Image (cartoon, rainbow, N blue to C red; front, top):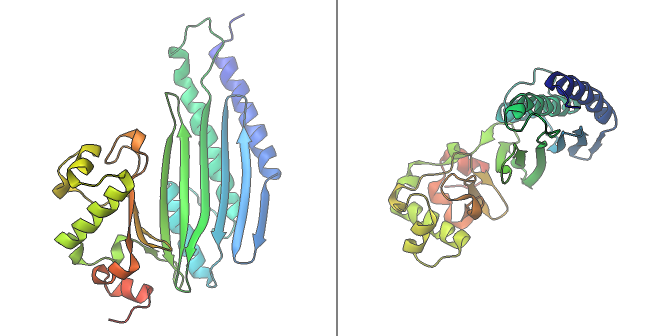
Length: 272
């Protein structure tokens, strides 16, 4: 017997609610030294989401709240609760992802023959972890994975560096106007040539959507401080085909001083 759409949707909706709260009650949540660790999965027979968060705990509570506020904004800015309650923060974004996937199923009926008892399975995951850290800054690495049907899912990966003293996001705002000079452009091209494993600028241009290297711009996502230097990451499809992944390059610290403004110099504790 053919199932009706209404039956599918109501059953799925109940399952989402039941499994969401069940999974959240069984989540792994603990505090370890200077980090808060949360991990749990939510799913139905149709959809699933997994969220794991490892957050730094800053000494100043106001700085911690500022960090969480900016992280919230990066994820969509819908959480209205207490930023100290990271568990609720994670649960809300898990519920949102499940609800979004459930809504997507409203269009599935049009994609398949009415006699087929089949519905697309979707997946949305979120991973947040602590990366590089000094006495003045901490970098959080974020990665989302969305499978919404089709040949493959889409991964978005980026970093966010925060100043420990006040929780302020540190990215392109630490750079001065020297990033427009030819030496900087050469550093960018050199870094991308290493990523694409090519030896000439001509070969690099052949890897990119736009072969005009003079029009190469910085990534849309903010750069972040890593152990090796300031790292810039382009997302899938941003400058090159999906098969090339997420092109990135790092400006080493010993070549970075010229391009830092006073905010960046102070962050790196560089006297100039």
